Image (tube, rainbow, N blue to C red; front, side):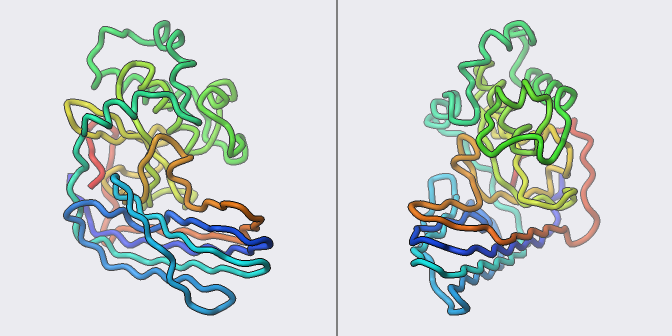
Length: 271
């Protein structure tokens, strides 16, 4: 599946009431081979600052800065991804970490459920499709139906949520089926409503395969931002120690040329 050039941007407007450390994860991930032209601008009360950049093993780029009391922080990011990166390899550590229960993907609570819902003798690739279809048919995409602290069990009971809720339930079910799975925050051309988007990745035949139970955007257009166990690892904004107000944020993501088609049947890796 061809990957078209993609253009993405985001803007965050934050007021800091009490001194804090802010962390942003909004830049395109640092994956091998990717070709990207980008610009990140951060200002405090209109004055430019240079945040510290921390890069994780998965290529997440955390931009960190300390802000004193009563300041306004503006973050502007723009990037053109003109060449896809290489799909991330599956490591031995991945096969351990991404089978474990996590804050929002409580796989240990689903062992009995999956035993009654799915045929455990089926191959992982088949189970991946079964889980994706189950979540897509079970949940309604409904903004405001969930709280930021809701996990996969809450989502299953509510039968509704947004993209992160869909992804958390997919991840939890797959882990309960002994399939390593994780959450990926992405820019998603074609997504409506436009926002930071969340999808799931699972290890199938020694490669990371992306699934999106919401079906809101073609998977080959996705641009990786951050990868982790769940949304606790991939949040676009973290606040450590103080009080902040998110005044506003905006996200755009488009392809240069026609948006790719995705019928959901092919295996796709985020590149």
